[in-house]
Image 1 (cartoon, rainbow, N blue to C red):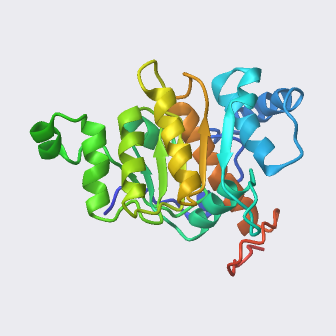
Image 2 (image 1 turned 45 degrees about the vertical axis):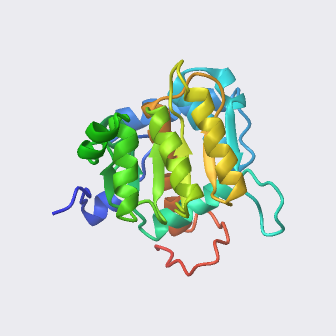
Length: 251
């Protein structure tokens, strides 16, 4: 058995307001919290849903202004919804979700999708020992050798060096379906996300990132969960994204 979490059909289709909300009381609390967030964050576009999720995750109303969406529409114009469409499409295709560390992986819900969840950390130990690079950077490079990141949902919530390594992989031809990168910290975190945005724009790889020093695994997981939620809304017919693929809508 792989690390992919298996759920019953009922669990797969179960409505949820947020990660971890499985009881009615928990779902009521989560929905009430989101109602409060919507008083301060617009609720007009798909990108707004992700701004709301970032505020909910970080407990900071101002965080809505720190998200960045990298991607273009069919005409090649910048489009905030491009990485959301790409991510939802990847979820519907059951692409692998690859996180940098265990915490990011644990935060990604196992409900509402059939994607395998993998973590990079734990791979590339020999490369890290030989070169002196961080374990997370070496892990990304090791998985990239196995083509794990091609067409994957690449999630980086903690390690700036993992983001730098992934950017190098993209320059060398790797093409994730979408990137969610919110590494946190005072050393190279800001620069690592800038690097992701640069290569994402240059090589047309959709990405969701943030600016500033804040971020973290919780935020990365929350944004990834919202991609899953958007995909679920497409699959159930609640949302039409015109993804260009045949989706069997659940009745």
